[in-house]
Length: 283
Image (cartoon, rainbow, N blue to C red; front, top):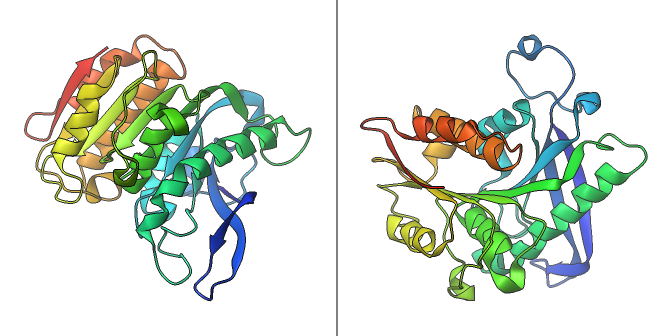
C-alpha cells in the first residue's frame, strides 16, 4: 500500500476558521506487489515494490462511509489487491473521521467529483514514464465501489447522468443508496454491471433503499443479501459475512473486469450460504 497525496486545485473546501484551500484527496493505493505472500503474514506492506511486470491491472476506486476512513475496510481492499487489482481509496476531505472540525455529511454531494478526479489522477500516474505506480493500471478496466455514503458516491459515478463517468465498467455498492440531496435518477441503458450488497438488519441504510435502486438498474445485476447483518461490520470485521463479501465481489470483478466467464458460477455459489447469505442474480 502506498499513500498518494492528490490535490484538486479546481475545487476548494472551507475550513472551520472560514479560510478555503484546494480540495485535498489523500488516497491509499493498494496494489499487487513482488515477494512471497506468506513473508508478511498477510499484512499490508507500505511502499512495497509493485509487481509491474505482471500488469497492467484493473482499477477499483473505493469510497469510505461517513465518519470513518479507508482503514476500516483494509482487509477487503487488500484482498482485492492480492487478487490482481489496483485499489485507490481516497479519504474524503470533509466526511471522513479526520475532517477538520469533524465530519460534515452535507459534503456528500461533492464526492462524486472526488471519485472522478481520483480515477483521472490514477490513470495519469500510471501513464507516467516513471514513478511507483507507472504502468500499473489498465485504463480500459475500471470499477467504482463504496460503502454507505461511499456507496452513494459510487452509485452516482456509475449511473447518475450529471455525475456519471463513462470510463466506469462495473460498480460494487455496499449498503449504499441514491444521494438524498440529489434525488432519484433514471438508470441508463447499457450502464455498467451492478453488484449490490445489503444487510437485512441494517438500520442506517434500510434494505428498502438498496432494493429500490436495484430494481431500477438494468441487467446484468446482482444483489447479495446478508441475512441478519447490520451496516458496517460485514465489510470490516464480522465473519463469515466479510469473507462472503470478499469472495462474491472478487468473482464479480473477475467476471466483468477480467472477463472470465466461469467467474459467474463462483459468484452465485459464494453468495448462497444457508442461513447467512442469499444471492439474487440477473445476468
